[in-house]
Image (cartoon, rainbow, N blue to C red):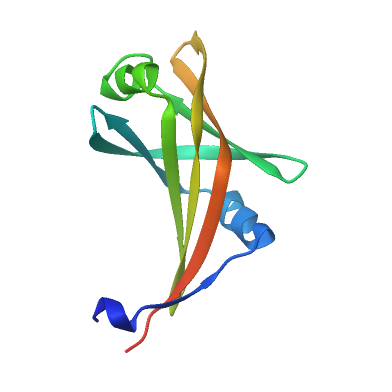
Length: 123
């Protein structure tokens, strides 16, 4: 399939929240000195009114935490597959690091930009 054949429609806020509620694996995108770094992570969703907050857990040490302490700007990507389509949600914002508690630290992302698309697979 060529990229020209890929069709999509924008998701509304309720559809975006539905994708996020189904959870699964998110990809946390970070940047260190202009170099992208993407890490798969599990997450939980909290919705405050209509504002989603993504909660991720991480060990307190490691490359991801080193990058976040220097640059808290992140993008979280979540996918939901269907039979003839797949949904993609992007949440851009800043990561807020919680207190270190065993076994790690909580990372909270309150997105300032949220978008979603449903891509249709065509033959």
